Image 1 (tube, one colour):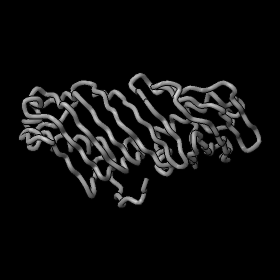
Image 2: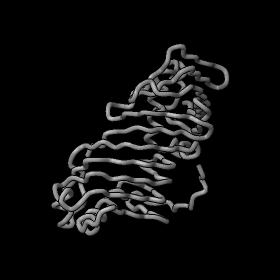
Image 3: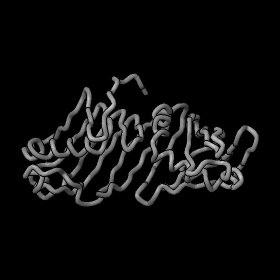
Length: 258
């Protein structure tokens, strides 16, 4: 994958700029799609993202179908997406049966999703984008919650509360993930931690960590003979998760709730 994409300016929480390509099209000539639905969907997508590049959206369906308040199918491709602080290198998604407030949209009101719907697709994530995502409060807090029950109580007592991470960094290898970070102690000293694990799918909604090793201060090492599973929730259904050098790829689906 070529990472040399045009640079995207930083965008405020309330603004999204789409550079280069910003297209919403339909294979059928639909006045409702072109006049009402396309602008409404475009605005809604932008409101969900902090940054996006090379955005393409394809709406499929005729006026008669859409007037029932249901979009038969939408396909979305984009690169350099930032969603809730998570940097996603490339996405290729499709969704079917999306129920919307078409009557209000025609009157100029914002688009609203009325019911949950399934979303399917593929996500490519470069190591550099994952490292950028590690700075997001959402992912940092998830890592803290994962590590806390694995570490000994005497070590946790040395840490400043609430526990925060500093200088997080990850490396992707074929089938294996390396992660390192620093904690701040009660005496304002940084304590380093490194984690090494094989990463694969345990089920469609669970990640499996095998051969997990955690090392603190290059002195104490904790090996875990039992496999550790991370539950992603019942709304997630992954089909494939692949770690290669510098890149992670996953395919599957999830349920999007309004």
